[in-house]
Amino acid sequence: MYRAFLQELAADDNPIRVGIIGAGKFGAGLVAQLSRMEGVEASLIADLDLDRARYAYTASQIPEEEIVTVESVLEADQAIYDGQPAVTQDGLLLTLVDQIDVVVEATGVPAVGARMAYTAIQNGKHVVMVNVEADVTVGPILSRMADSAGVVYTLVDGDQPGATMNLVEWATTLGFEIVAAGRGTIFYEDDRTGTPETVPARFGFDEEMLARRTINLKMYNSFRDGSKAQLEMTALANMAGLVPDVRGMHEPSANLADIPRLFSLREEGGLLSQHGVVELANSIAADGKTMLPNPIRMGVFVVVRTEHPFTQEDLASYYVHVGGEGKNFLLYRPYHLVAVTAPISIVKAALYGVPTGAPLYPPTAEVIAVAKRDLKLGEVLDGSGGYTVNGLCEKAIVARAEKLLPLGLADGARLKQAVPQGTAITYDQVELKDSFALTLRRLQDATVW
Image (cartoon, rainbow, N blue to C red; front, side):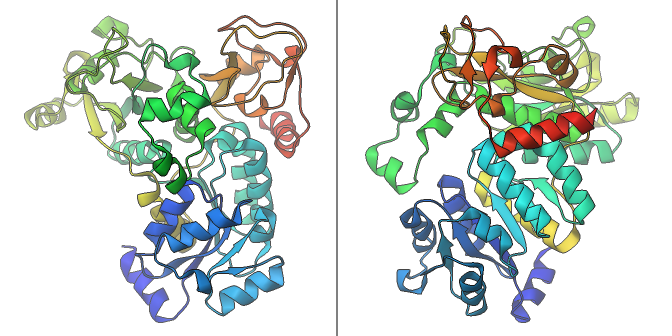
């Protein structure tokens, strides 16, 4: 479906031109994949570290002498016109360049992502939001602004929210009910309190790997302290209209065959009080230390329900794992390919004006900030993956009613009182750091409900 159109664009020397903000592991991986494709190209990369931006190109066999550094829109447009890959330190500059069709925001910083996406939308660019931290904070209003501007705001294919959304869209198109949708985790008993300096040991990264793949320790710590999974399932909830069944979700230890049984209603032998939820399936056994024999690991899943006996019989005969008294079935992918399949979202937005998934308005879920340890009066919070807070997924109506602080606004907030470990932090307990994300969030809160 996509390839023929992309070949036409390549033949006409009119590729989809992509600007990438953030040249970390994801950004460099995206450049690598784009370099293998026809009709779409990474034209401009923005990163505060220009060496890292250049490396994203050179790692894909683009000669360093062909890469130009640009400091103005005019210089950037000229470089693209001349067919030269370009780098800049200024992400906002990238959003202003006429010849850029799609902006990929991959910084992982909510305040940065909010401003970059907003400016790109205002300048008529499609936005592929890899920055799930920004999306769960201000994604609904950015999506609404994009609709008004006639451009696409989308989460990214390949990352777990987008990959799961593909399964949700497929299943609901076929008339299945979504009982639960989610992803696997690898969550050990001591991961919740993990800190950035422990990342190399936890992931097995050596110094060469850390440098070569430009590993962000704080970001990778959010993968292991639970916050990233909570952020991602909140993004999925807001795309698909789902909610967490309980704060933080159940996240049971589960082999593949256990998933449709556990994610069924309590009266059917499961854990859930309702259908239509986001969930996590932990690949670590209940002892908190041992890998299960047949888990989903970092794959994605949906538990679907059908009331039709013919379909029930068919799915059971195809060896699909069953739960919910024979009415619930597990559909899954054992992988998510992150940057490798991210170009699909770029192409869908540019060619068809269609998102992989975009948050609904109003949102259904929120990621709230919870004290990672006992916090003292006057301490400054450091956001996702840091030393002070974790994120937990909560229903948006509950978070609003209890005035709970979104994780995306926690970085830089100063506590006005002590907060015990495990306690959800409220707006009333902090002095917020001024940022564009805060301004946009206040606008969202004033208009969304």
